[in-house]
Length: 87
Image (cartoon, rainbow, N blue to C red):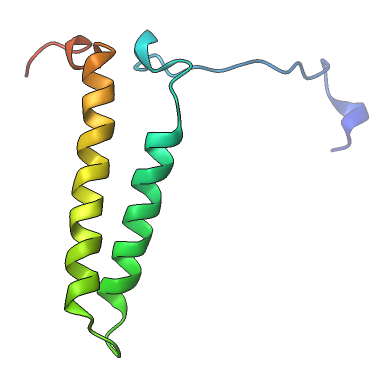
């Protein structure tokens, strides 16, 4: 099927998740990037069985915990914790 066979032209549409609270729209991604980088470093150190640097592994675990906490604090400050009813 070629693009000429399409019944209607495709239109770019911005899709948002229905579960995404308004507090997350426009969220500063620097905290998310910090968390992702910390997790990637932690994963790399945990899977490197040739060199078990326990000090580096402990530091990576602490950084991951701090990054997760910073992101959670920012989300709570934006009211995300009140988005869903308690289960």
